[in-house]
Structures are given as structure tokens and as C-alpha cells.
Amino acid sequence: MGDSPFSPTTSTAATDKTLDELVHVFAERAPRYDRSGNIATENLHDLHDAGFLALALPKEVGGGDISLRTVTQIISRLAQGDPSTALILAMQYLQSGAFAHSPQWSDDVKQELFESIRQEGALINALRVEPELGTPARGGLPATTVSRNGSTWRISGRKIFSTGSTALQWGVVWAKTDDAEPKVGPVLVPLDLRGVRIEKSWHQLGMRATGSHTIIFDDVEIPERYLGLLAPSPAKETGPVAIASWHAVVIAGLYNGIAIAARDWLVTFLHSRIPSNLGASLATLPRFQVLLGEIDALLLSNEALIDHAITLAEQGTESDTRAGLAKQVVTENAITAVSKAVAAIGNPGLSQDNPLERHYRNVLCGRVHTPQGDSAFLTAGREALKI
Image 1 (cartoon, rainbow, N blue to C red):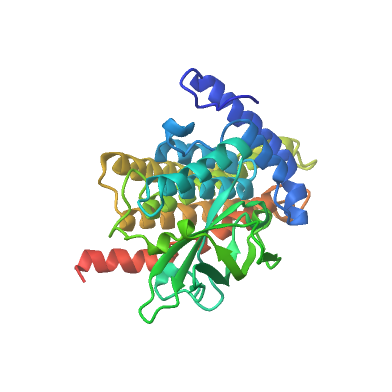
Image 2 (cartoon, rainbow, N blue to C red):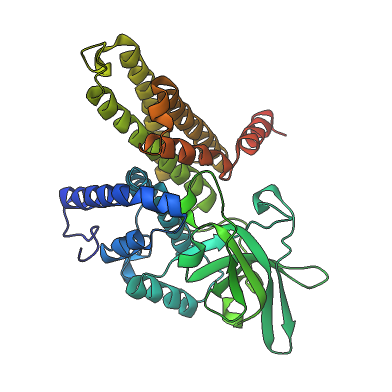
């Protein structure tokens, strides 16, 4: 598809056309990859060819340095075609953008990563969750450990729910040193190193084509330049990418995109379904007209909430707490919207011959992303009570 669709010489209309084409193609492929549980590598190649994989990189290295608003728009649109691919791309944007602005990596290491993304279409994601620890967002030390023997550094451990696993070239691995008072932080691991292996453990109800398997590090030798956990860590991330709040907003946009796809399919179905005893389409029945009004009200609320969160981020006044609440409300609204559609039309809503049942399984996965509901509400409540 040529150069990046976000180059300064490209019109918004051309950009929208490229996205529309990708959404259409991804939607056609989605049932096949959902059933197989494999990552849609065709989609990832298309994204690379269209110049999307490098868009979060700085402009001076050939990226687009795209804003939170643009990231969210892209991910929401692509999620209407294949949300599993959209999630892999969302992690690419969040992690490559954060990497670019982090002081924990040398310019040489950054350049190495940037070149692999731009030239080869390399994918990167953070690998943080562990079997015993769960998500580090809830606190605790990782079991994944970095140790030194003479001049050699090695990493051992396992990370579960590793979105994009078999398609990733880079992992930003959350780990600790084996010191009495361990340092904790990221280690950049090229995932083709000896001792890295993938255990296929992703057997979920929804978002099946994310390939979120377990990645195991068995005494993997790591060059010292990749040990970001040894660099002085700032109290907060610097630069324009505040990854916690960006993550919450982008995830909200993704799951809202799934709900939009479900809503659009429902509209088509109601117009095309003409029961013989009715002699007219289901769209003519007031109860389905009310249903669409209820769904559109939920999606309108989502649109306003996402836009509000992005506007606050653009003004520099967004907080992780408010972003977490936005993610919670948007994902629950999306789940409710799709649930209403499934409940209203009976068996066709649960048939694998129709995409609605896949949208339903996928949208339910919005609840598992950080911050989860109880954490979002607890943080907001403590902040309100100044505890």
C-alpha cells in the first residue's frame, strides 16, 4: 500500500480510505483466525506495508509521533474489522512510543529498535504478567530474575498473557535483579535469543487471535545495554506518552470499536430479516427501533467520554485515575450494548454463521485489561476521600 498513510503530504481522505480498506479485509479474515486461534500475520504484514507499525516512533527516525487521539482513532477503527489485530497494534504503539521517550535506554538501543520496526516491521510488547504474581499493576515483585555471572547477564522466568507472542521480535520484560535489595524494572529481550520459547497456553473465549501465550526465558543471555532496570528510574514517565492513562483510553476505544461493529451488523440484520408472518423487515418493529436507540445512547456516551479523556490528555490535565474510570465505563457500556443485541434476536445472535457471537465473546474481554473494575473504583474512591 506504499508509504505511511500519515505522511505530511497525505490527505485525511486518503488516510480514511486506507483504514476503511484494512477494516474490510480484516473483517473478512476475522472468522478464520478466531476459529484457528492463530495470529493474523497477514493483517500485520498489511499494516507494515501501509506504514502503520512505525507511527508512534519520533518523526526524526521515520515515525509519525502520533497523538493519543490518532492512536485511539486507528485502534477503534481497526477493532471493527479484527480486534485481536487491533490489540497487537495498540501494544505496538504504546510500547514503542513509551520506549522512545524513556530515559532508561541508550540512543544506540533506541536506534536499533526503531530501525527494526521501520525496516522489518518488528513488533514489540511489554511482558509483565506472571502465573504467581498476576499483573504487577496490583503490586508485588516479579519472579522473573536477572542475574550476573562475571561479565554475563542472564534472565529466567515466564510471562503469561503475552499478547502477540509468536509475532513479536522484542519483549520489554518486567524483572528484578537477584540482589539482596533487588532493582526492579524493564529488560529488553530480542525474542529470537537462545533460551526463549513459547508455550501455547492461550485458550480463551474471546480475543482468540491475539496469541497471548506464555513466553519462557530459560537462562537467556542478555547484553548489558538491554538492562533498563539498571538505569536510574524517573518517578514518572517523561515525554508525551504517559503509558498508564494512554493504555486505559486506547483500550476503551478498542472495545467501543467492537460494539460499533456489533451495532452495524445488527442494523443490517434487522433490515434484511423479513419473517413471513410479518411481511416486513424486523427494522419496522418499534421494539427493535427502541433497542437501537438504547444501543446508540450507550455508544454516544462512550464517544463523549473517550473524547473528553483525550481532550484532558491534550491539555495535560488527564490523570491515571480518570482514565481508568473512563476505561471502566466505556467497556461496560460496550458489553451492555452487544449483550442487548444478542438477547434481542435469539439464535442468530449466538450462531457462528454470524459475527455477532464473535463480537460478544470479544467484547467481554474488555474487563480483564488493566485497570480492572475494582482497581479503577478503589483508586478513584481513595482519591476522592484523600486517603
